[in-house]
Image 1 (cartoon, rainbow, N blue to C red):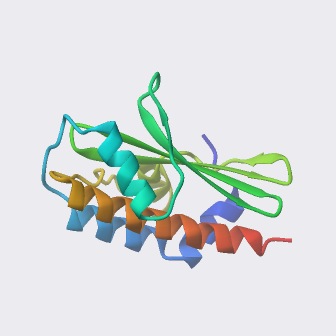
Image 2: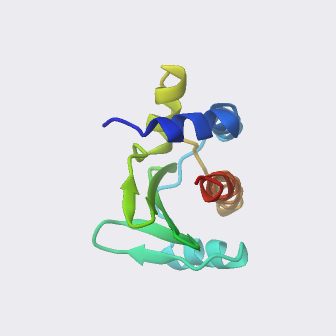
Length: 146
């Protein structure tokens, strides 16, 4: 998939690659297979986010809205790994983002990077919190586009 060139510029501006690599390196060990959906939903709520769990596809969804901007962030938790997938619609137009954070990282650096890993709920909470801070930076930058 081709990424919108504005997204690449935005990601470079907010140091996405460095921030995501730091997150992955901080959380590079662990395995947590049998998480509780209720406990994960509680983590999102404790962080101040409304979350929707898609049971059929097995992921958690958080939405951000600002004026003509809609950002959807999906979190897939499998085998203790957190895969974050980003979708953006601006002024009714879907922006070609590329989806998973790992793909975005590779698009900027040409390097592969593992997903952040967690072995307990505290680690998962920190991963989610840091990831959503990155998404908020993306939201602020996109909101400034003309």
